[in-house]
Amino acid sequence: MAGLRFALFGTGFWAYYQLAGWFEAGAVECVALYNRTPARAEALAKRLNISSAIYSDPEKLIAEQRGNLDFLDICTDVGTHRAFVELAAANGLPVVCQKPMAPTLADAEAMVAACNGAGVPLYINENWRWQFPLREFKRSLDRGRIGTPFRARIHYANSFPVFDNQPFLKDLEQFILTDIGSHILDTARFLFGEPQTLYGTTFRVHPDIKGEDVATVILHMQNGLTVTCEMSYASKTEIERFPQTYVYVEGNQGFLELGPDYQIRETTADGTHITHHPPKHYAWADPAYDLVHSSIVDCQANLLRALEKRGDAETTGDDNLKTVRLVFGAYASAAGAQVIRLP
Image (cartoon, rainbow, N blue to C red; front, top):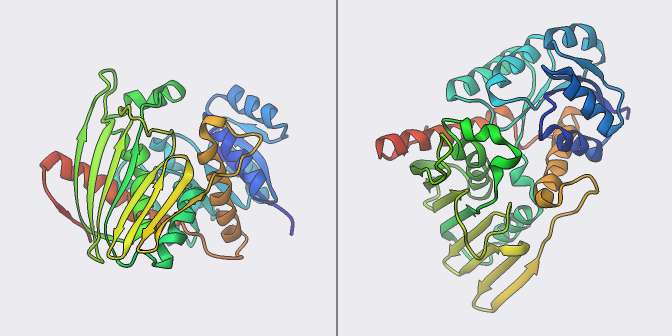
């Protein structure tokens, strides 16, 4: 079939990789780029050798390109997400929105309501759960060889200088839970289901940032499992391998681990079985972000099938709203030193 046509809103750090991911995922055409600074959009188009129309006015883009668009892809700063999603809904356009969905829970709920009210699909470009090692870990977990899980830990802790590539992160009043926490808490849901309570703590180590760079969230799942989510951009450890996520699960018949260098170790009464699951490499990917960039392709392939109505998307607005509730529930818990009961 002919490729779907879309406009990309935002041409910052992640836009290049997001566009490359779309082109890798399937037949698509980016017909327009929006950025407040047209020169940045022009530079991105030149870098990817595409002939997209350039706009600095989002309403003008919609007015002139509406007949050419099958969906919008929003890759702007989080504070603009609600306005652009509501613009898409008002014009009957399916919309893909970058994570985190919104700067507040109320905004996220409004975005979902606007799209549901207009009958417009809302998808969230939540790629973390699509990392190849995590997908393989989920498959191993679902085989059930370690029996019934009763305790798990998700560990994302490193000293990668994330502020060098994205200096605006230093100025966020809420940082690691909205940034990496959106990914890690979504991964917890992907692997283990829905929680019924949470307890969170936060801490700031870097002296030149406004928000927190360390957080711990304990989830008590509906199936009785306890999941501890550890997040840090201030941890110097021997096992750190940015941007790898480690997962440890104890079951009543064994132990399953996703550890450094994409290694899955399954220990049962039969011994320990070790497999290796590195991500696919793409020529356009930054080697430091290989794991993340390859997951963008798989995530967007899933979204593309949904946009083409050939399947369902995993990361819809309705689904990701559950993750957003965990993020802001963790902030509320940390602020009040209290356990939060989830709806």
